[in-house]
Length: 322
Image (tube, rainbow, N blue to C red):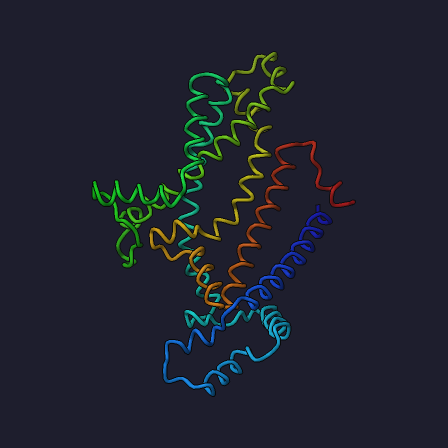
């Protein structure tokens, strides 16, 4: 296990270095200069002002020199300031990450609560009317664009019925959890409905394959109840491919959902990354992308550890010793 973890941490370091380098270079090669964007709002600015600002921000240096300077500062914990928001990048990122974590976490939890029993039931009643109905519903859910679904929910629950706010978030911290849940209801429902269909089909496919294995017939021959056969033996064997999908979606908990956050005017990570890239805000864009990358790597590591727990045939010791 220690050798395996060491190799994974080493791989993660290489991935983060390559990710930071490529992201910095690609953002730097984008057309447009952030100083020109800043000066466009001030018609009295002169060419001397532009040159002075480029020297202050280090934009008069070659791109590679600027990257190495950023990397050396980042390794000491100094991620710089955001030119767009005039705040320390770390503080800004933490404030926006909280909104995305609540939104994405609740939507993922709701999706799993619905998709897990639906997928298990569809697999157990394979080719029945219920299975066909669940499959048809999943196809419809996969086909609906999230932005269109968001607009439909706003039109129904906010405009027509007037039950929920159309967007935004509770500005008053003392407003209470009920008010916060009202603002979260529509974006959480949008993201959940967009992911329930995919999770249900993954769980159904994995359960169908699992219920056809020899150990399932052995469990039934020993007299195990049907619920124990499905949940204890069938579900555990079906979880590894589902865990893979969940681990890939783990990074989205911190990356946010750009379309949903934009439609519902929520200040999450997705919108923050989008604004940082378009505004050539190097510090903010790099730290945001690297944060999402770190979370994806952590999700993959947790998935591998889960494989070893779910399937005794998988050994991390052997993999780490190769």
